[in-house]
Image (cartoon, rainbow, N blue to C red; front, side, top):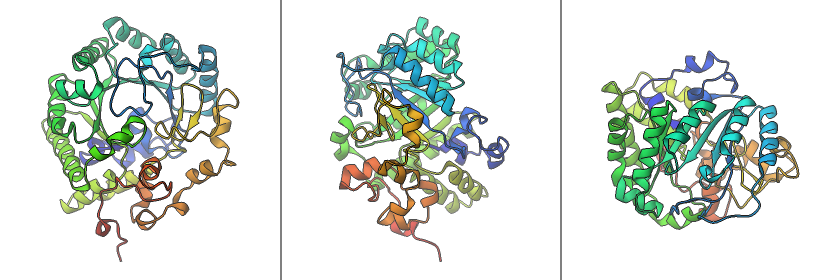
Length: 395
């Protein structure tokens, strides 16, 4: 993820990170992406079931019972291992995680094992009682997915009224004192709503928004033709940067991030160079600390059935199952060829990725997206929108 507000508006400096020694266990949550030890943030898809049917769902969820989900006991054993392994954050996801009856027990267990607990939810099932429970157990963050304003979001999510219910859930979290933010997946169907999403941040006093680039996985594979072109992506990223700056200059300290396309980092840096920013080199230093895409290193996924994946999108490739081996053992087993190569992928990248001067800040971007388009894991990521001139080495 690329912290637009952190980098462009200068709300984070390299010295802020270095003060904590870049150790994941020591860094506050807003600096965690700059850690150097890269113990993985683990996305745990606690259930596949969901009350909505989103057109881009990577888990292809529906409102039905799925067999084989990890039991509460198995989940607690997983959390024991993650805590001992040094995982800094567990992101409880789904499906819709609030459809899992023992979710609060699992969140509290993660906290007791020294990990930060966050959830990714559609927000429609959060009432005041649930939000108050989140507050009591110390949930760190609630990320609520809104993929547009009312009509756009409801069509995208396959259910009328989903926007209003999600907004009500956000308000309940705010009233309970639980940090909450928005998650927005960019595509041709909703790009026109981005400016309205920024206004929603102001109107509802929402402190954070993450704009996700589309990943071609699950039902999202069918949306590939509705992804933005390179030129359209550049326009959208510029819009996000401009709106972030305008809020910052107005004294509205919102956290704005883009996610799942690490070309955003170099693009931001090049824009700052064009603008003559005195902070451009500091931003480059922070981008190098970030390190780019870290699937298989700094991000991992445990599926509802215990399968371990390099990230939450790469569901067709499993490194093992936590029912058979601990996550920590699976994660560090470089006997698996793909896991070994992901740990140090640069020698295996091909095409324009291999020769890119920003490889240290992008790390080849999303391998699952490259594979989806070309069938080749190590091919360039087709969603990179930087020009050949921009990525060419400077003599």
